[in-house]
Length: 273
Ligand code: SF4
Image (cartoon, rainbow, N blue to C red; front, side, top):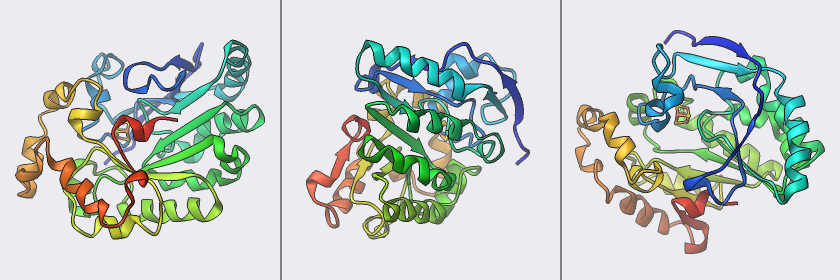
């Protein structure tokens, strides 16, 4: 897989109003435009931000320059109007490979550690998040890191999101975050085919799990995802029985063997502040 085409942009604003599925938040925050993980099921690939680009989703990344300083100013203005609850990120992964060098997300966390919002939710599938444990700890209970673990099967991960980090590395990262005292959860979202081992893998590394699927979680009742035409990927794996609106229940019931009901969340409630 070739590296994405990086472009450097100076945004005029960073905090966007949170809408729809994320209405429990006041703002969304995206350190990058585009996402090099390029997951097959990513509904952002069909949204205007991606649809009007000539390059394929996953092949381009816009690096937002000056983001830390801009956010500092925006946080002051937002806090003057009321509570500030931020979801990072809604249309990119804040810890995609470019973050190793560009450190945009880290600059945003530095700004938020100095002037903490009322709540910050960090959604990622990258172990790189552990680099920022020092800053995350400064936000105490006002932050939660949600690590995507859509499956425990590497062959499934490789078919649906070949550029994303391996599942074992994500589990290890969750363990490190939890051990350090950062509030965490695993997001089995979107539910992909998985094995009966998944609950036992999650139990030691997180006390909280959210389960979500394409129907409940893509913000359009599954329409956006259906347009992506994912059926052939299930067929390629010989796992078409998982291409079903009921698949999430299978996973949820398996998790019930290891988790109390109050530790398990479904769809939007698991992503709420
Ligand atoms: S990591 Fe998230 S934003 Fe990036 S391609 Fe995958 S689903 Fe989309």
